[in-house]
Image 1 (cartoon, protein in one colour):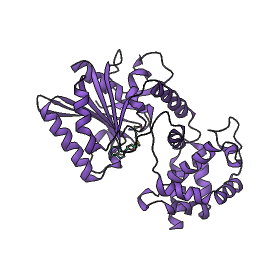
Image 2 (cartoon, protein in one colour):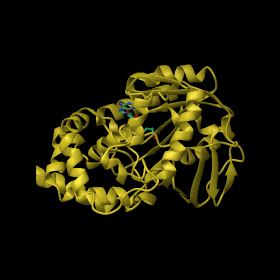
Image 3 (cartoon, helix red, strand yellow):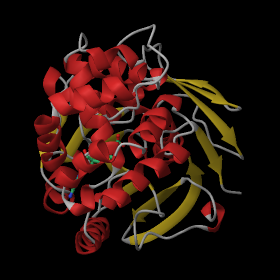
Image 4 (cartoon, protein in one colour):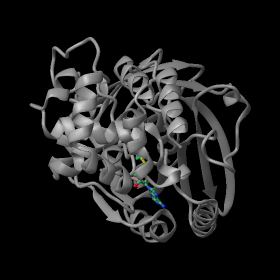
Length: 348
Ligand SMILES: C[S@@+](CC[C@H](N)C(=O)[O-])C[C@H]1O[C@@H](n2cnc3c(N)ncnc32)[C@H](O)[C@@H]1O
């Protein structure tokens, strides 16, 4: 078991090209079975090295004066460099029981605002057809992506769109991305999640922040700016799962405008049976009244999701739009994108 866990950390070190700090930390833990083994307290399907890294990160965010925090770029502008081994061992030995408890009970959870830059052009297509929209974000986390019309976007190429905002997103594009000239009018913002995060709860949002890699400053900036917006203008976020909550949410949204269901990086959390049940519910709802569904999901980690040709061999997510109009269902495989929205490649 221990050997496997150290190997997981070595693999993460190889994969973390966008976060040199995560690569360094993972490489160090790959040499320290005593630390890697803490992850054995997580349920087998949760034994992902990023979970232990998030647990450690949460501790240094909560105790920014602890010795280990001096290495973390998320805590200090002048992080220590050099060998972290001694500080890491001392910290993990002192906090082993808390770390075990965190990995045993928590899941990594994000709320990645960067994904709004992927959803916006698709929402623009829908709005051009139906007018104002009412959003239902399934797996909404803290509901930050329900405020996508309050963020500003810079598509390169493609141009700028959106109001002046403290949340600025930069998206590198390829292909004919239909960047809208203005953000769609959003008349309802309903989120559902079995574990919603209250944007006003500092302890709960600290876990979302801990799941961001410590040297990804742009992600912290947009996360904090989006949290401010969500705190000032709370969305209607409900504790419910995708299957149980979708019908009521769509019904409530439809009273306000054309309902658009969205989900990003959520379907891999559902069992195959629940994924089928969720899609069946959408089909039933769409058969009864017009509905749109945009999803940004990873075929690589979501069995049963169509794997469009333009994604094969690439580390990306697929962007698809499903429309039910007058009871007829149409599916468009529109694009592939970076999981955090850094690039968007429109399918020709
Ligand atoms: C990786 S996060 C993505 C959050 C958000 N959609 C985003 O793109 O930033 C996955 C979210 O799915 C939620 N989730 C897990 N199981 C779910 C279910 N059965 N139904 C709805 N949401 C679920 C989790 O609680 C978590 O907030």
